[in-house]
Length: 193
Image (cartoon, rainbow, N blue to C red; front, side, top):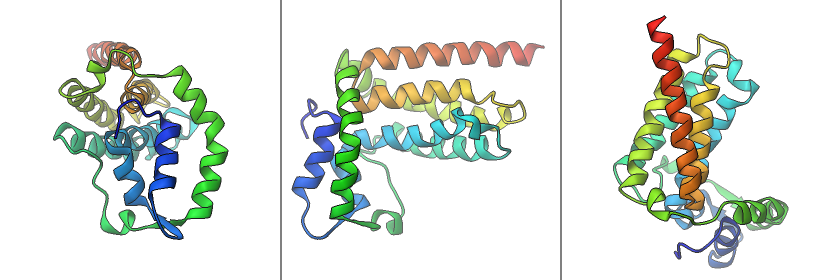
């Protein structure tokens, strides 16, 4: 897959290059290649970042999911491993096409706002280091659960990292690293007090 493809292009490519009345989740993940990690990291991070993160147990579950996904990226997986049942889930082509059409205005804005810049920061080996940081901060969300909404800070860093890795935008990766630094400072000062 060309690195110049935007998220909209990738979604359209899945639509155009798959056959049949149904599209398997595994096919979508494979077409996304390494970008498949971004959305999968972002989803639990968003759940922990939003007010849903104040629900007991939610930050811990989200943190574990983030760590599991990020560790796969650290070890060089091209796209996330999913259990066979999940990979083989199918959605109808009509539903997929409809979802892509509804999401297109949003994904086109993302493609304009976030674009490949300083790509070295979103490619291996740097992307693996960023994934390791995401895994570690995902795990920090577990003890942070005792403080309401405290998991929001590492979640924000993971959200930015997932956007940067998905769109190959090194500037967003730098912003994520800044948030991680701030989160580290908060964690350090909290452990001293």
